[in-house]
Length: 527
Ligand code: G4P
Image (cartoon, rainbow, N blue to C red; front, side, top):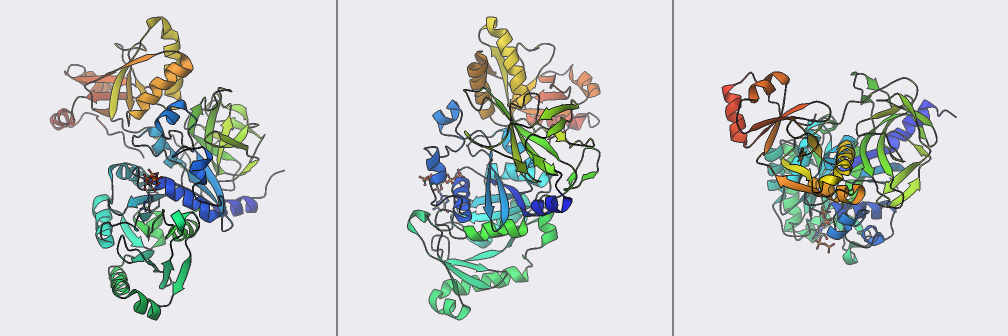
C-alpha cells in the first residue's frame, strides 16, 4: 500500500538524525546514556553500559573490541522524545580514529559537539568538526562537566570562535562557576532553572523554576555575574539565529553536566527544537530529491561478520526519501539489479530488531547485503544517485605483506573485501601489486582492525611494516609522469583508479609545489 506524501512528510518532520562529536573522555557515552534516560528509553542511567556488561561495551561485537574495551562499530540508537523520533548515530569513541567515524557524519543532519569545560576544543573534536564544516552541517555545542572546575565560560566562547571560526550563541547560560554549578538561565525565556543533584545522576535532575528576585536573594554574587554576562552576550549579538545555525556558521550552545544530568534536558529539547528535520537531498546530478519522493537511500557503512555464527554482512542505509517497507524490492544503483530487503533490521552492537517501516532520516541495517558498497544508492521507481561519500585524507601509511606466501590467495581475498568495506584504503603500483600494497588510513587503529580481521576471517596473517611516507595528495597522470623522476616520492593508485602521490614530509611537498605551481597536487578534503 503506497503511503501518501503527507504521511511521509509528517514522519520526516518528526525525525532528528544527529551524531555526537567529541574528543575521548569529554562525555559522549555519558551524554548518550542521559539522552536515553530523559527519553524514557531506559529507567536508570547505567543500563546502556550494563546491558553489554562493561564500559563502552555497547557495540563490542568484535573480539578485538572486547579485548581492548573499545567500540569500533558505529551504529544507531533510535528513541522517542516529545512525539519525535530521534536517531542518534554513534561515532566510535576510541582514542584512535578511523574513516568510519567520518563516514557516519555523512548520514547525519546535525551534530552535537561535546566539549569538556576544563579543556575546550581538543584535537579529535577539531578533526570531526572540520568534516561538519565541510558539509555546512549545523552543530549544537555542549559545555560539559560544568560540575567540575574548568575554564571561564566566556573564555571558552572566545576559544571556540577563534579556533574553529564557529560563533557560539548560548541558549542557556550558567549560574555559578565551573565546579559550583547551580543552574542555568534560559536566554529564550529569561527563566532561572535551578538543578538538584540526584544520587550518581541515575535519575533525572529535579528542576526548579526560580523567579529573578528570589534568585538574586538566594544565589547572590553568582546570580549577579550571570545576569551581567547574559547582558554582555545580548550586547555583542551572540544570540541564536536559525539561518546562520543551519548553514553551520553559528552554534547554539548549552551548558551542563552529563554526569549529574544538569542541562541534559535543555540540550535534548534543543536538538528537537533547533536541529533540522531531514530535508530534500542533493543528488549526484545536482537535483534535489524530495522527502516524499519514492524510497531512496544510500549506504554509509558496511560491516561484515558482525555475527560470527552467521558470518553475515550488514549494510547501513540512511533513508533519504519516501517510505521504506521491509520486503520491498529496491534497485541497487550501481548494478541496476533488484535487491530484496527481507532482512531489514535495526542493529545496535549485537542486538537486532526487525524493522518493518522506516522514513527519511532513519537508518536501516540490511543483513546479508553482499554486493552493497559504501556510497551505493538504493531506490524504487525512477533512477536516482546520491553523491559519493568522500574519501578522507590519509595520515598514516603502512606496507602490507602476507606472512606466509602460501596463503597469498586468502590474503588477496581479504585485502579486496576489507578494501571494499573501507576498513583501509589500499594503494598499489606496478612494483607492489597485491603482494605488498601500501595501506593508507586516518588512524593506526584501522591497520589493527585490518590485520585482526584478515587473520580471523580470511586466515591470512599480515606483516605490516612502516613506510617513510607521511602525507598524500591526489594527483593526475601528467603530474604523475613528472613525479616519476623525483626521489622519495611514490605515485600509487586506489581501486577506483585515482592517483595519489606519497611524500615523506610536508616540507618536501610544499617545496615541490612552490617550484611547480602548475602541478596537480590536491588535498583530499571531504566535501
Ligand atoms: P567519552 O564517551 O566521550 O569517552 O566519555 P565518557 O562519557 O565515557 O566520560 C569520560 C569520563 O568523564 C567518565 O569518567 C565520566 O563519568 C566522566 N564524565 C562525563 N560527563 C561528566 C560530567 O558532566 N561531569 C563529570 N564530573 N564527569 C563526567 P570515568 O571516571 O573515566 O569513568 P566512569 O567510571 O565514571 O564510567
